[in-house]
Image (cartoon, rainbow, N blue to C red; front, top):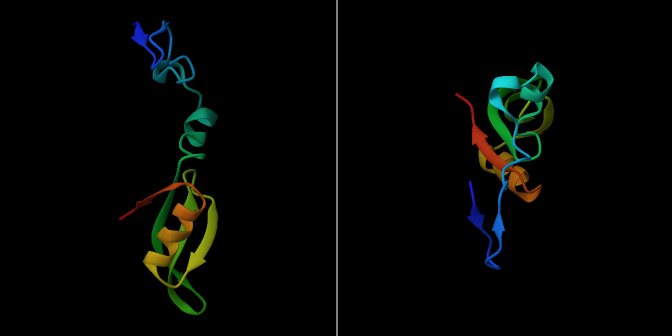
Length: 85
């Protein structure tokens, strides 16, 4: 594929950094999205219901009392928030 950049110069392989889905390892699959997304889901804490913020691989990152606060914290850290049902 030949895509022209903003300066008009063609870039023959702009997507080399992407993983080949046919040859992805379990470790690479677990790491997908770690630098881009985090998810929010309801959790139960000793203090009662709350919202947990988790990395794409499921590692807990934070707890918030409110869904909007949890999502705002994700955005503040330059990640894209997603919800899990």
